[in-house]
Length: 93
Image (cartoon, rainbow, N blue to C red; front, side, top):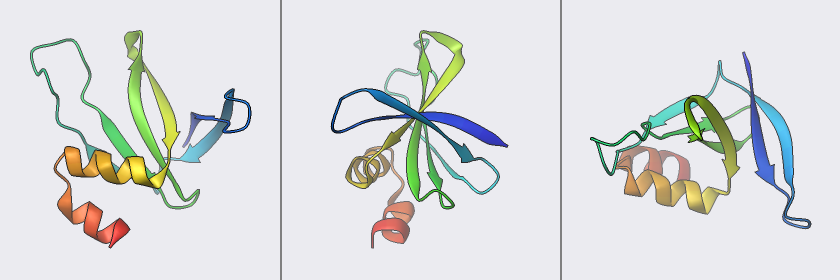
């Protein structure tokens, strides 16, 4: 299945759109900062076919997820913050 994502264009600051394959993506579950709140559990995906890190987060309504591409340094920091040391070692050495 192809999932749409957005990425910010470094030159213009505008949003660009693309798709990634969910069949090969590796999913990492985040840790909720406020488990009693309305926030959704955050998820980070590694899409090997596209060589991209993508963060899923809600966009105004819990039913609508937005997948946003992020740079490797931000993805590494996210994995550390959300307690995925094995993934950090595997993907970043």
